[in-house]
Length: 352
Ligand code: PMP
Image (tube, rainbow, N blue to C red; front, side, top):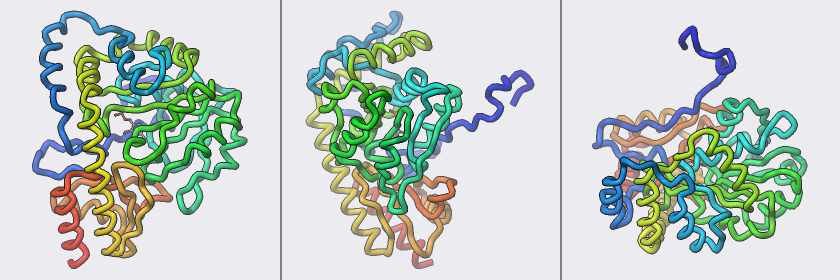
């Protein structure tokens, strides 16, 4: 820390991103990326758009929003495109939380939420998940703040049903409920269909996971037009050209190939269930993950030991240095070959 660093940030503990290794031989199951390249045609469209990089991008991503709105059964006014969904979440913390309206989220969830709260200087409250990692709905019903719920949750993978999301929405008519659907396409129900009924609902999604575009940084928030205008104010107050030309062009090309994305999601789901079975046979406890990762623990292996020993065998997974989940690890789902290599490595570790 330099002597110039503002006192305001001295206590800030920044988010720790998963490792992005320089060695390409490693099998990367640590940051929930897609193992597949972007849909066909995306790279070509990016190359074409590169010729226009002398010009700023459309700050409203109009063409992309139009296509996405049609796909989701919404109007373009219900959407704002962002630089990854992290930016949409940050805008929501900026726009909808303050001293009188704390952010409220589970104790075990996406680790960026407390960081967003701190950098924006808003109070936050963490509600403990139950022992089985389910969300204690009654406590969220009366929490008196802006609710942030990842659905499916990370790193547990558990999903809430739409009736449960609605229960929280109905209990908070005067607060925004942000449903972070980064992993929804892998097996949960999206709350997008509820947007016209709940003016307090904001749904956040990403192109990083099911659409194979993590490196591009493209996400969006969907909600009623007034909420979206509030987020637009945050965008125009921080980075008006938040989604660059390449991202807008790639996003459009990607949506035109939605069947290809869906097919790959199907493969990842199959690989998840295959891996679940193999790990269960080897004594792992595994949550009912609806996402593109599994949350696992083994009675004979600490979470950090599994992480370290897999790394020695060339496989990266994610472990969180956090009280309640120290015994657990999160394993992203890759190709079948990658998952076979994982199981082989696990066998080697368990035999050693
Ligand atoms: N929400 C959750 C729950 C996540 O796990 C992630 C990925 N780290 C994000 C949002 C952000 O993803 P992105 O910024 O790539 O859209």
